[in-house]
Image (cartoon, rainbow, N blue to C red; front, side, top):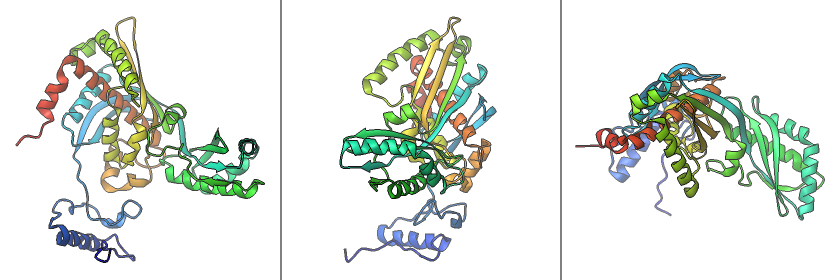
Length: 391
């Protein structure tokens, strides 16, 4: 390791154009690559502490505009133009097409039905009985744990501690509301302080790990589908058969038959989501608006439920069980990400529920478009026309 060349850093002030250029020169000398595009950031690196280390430039992802999409939410109301950051041809056009269908049918009703962010420690004991008795003690002393946790945050509120005993271990899930922040770091700090209070206060002073694995950060899990992580959001609409036939060349009866078949296929495959493609729209909005993109691993999970109504219209709903979004903190305040949030009226405090409703409604629009395209034979032809890079 004697020839190891560390990346240049300035411990006193590393977020300057000069330090970014030093690192670019470092790479030129070692790789021969000139960062002509990566180096073209439109903002001062001084805004970046807390978002990135060893800054060298930006990854420029194209942003397209889809819409308008009419949303009848409790927090998002009106017609929205949604910025989607993607390199996948046809995606923006497809989502716009689904948005037109939904808007002509009266729009999407979106509802946030639950909010819950976790940190999940595990406490260790000599025997299962000690673990059981500790669980009973924790129920009796919830108020003390809650006070300790909430001493670390202005907006985080601990409302529940779930218990899952395994052998001589007791796995816990500390459930919080976190305001307009995504909340993973907030809940981590709060739970650490609560666990230290528990260890100091309980007669056995039990050992613990701050994460026992059942908070499932950035991993899909069945427990999050059942119990919620982030926000649980429902987007629903009644699609008129006449509109679907006119715009998509598919009737609702055929759509419902296909839904039954794809449900069976999703069950066979063990899918985390039984609709066409929640991850596409979620990822594109996340990149555009400064969300933690790795949270797509959890956020794309959900359940599509549909009914063919007696009059021939089609009820279609998407329930996203673990949607993790923020309108404040993290990457949301960076210049381009803030602009995209402002396009949606979703920047700043008090706007995370609005953003969650927009994301869920967008997912439904994408599913309407892709589901119809597969049946109408447009899936392959549209990618041939819009989705191929040609010389």
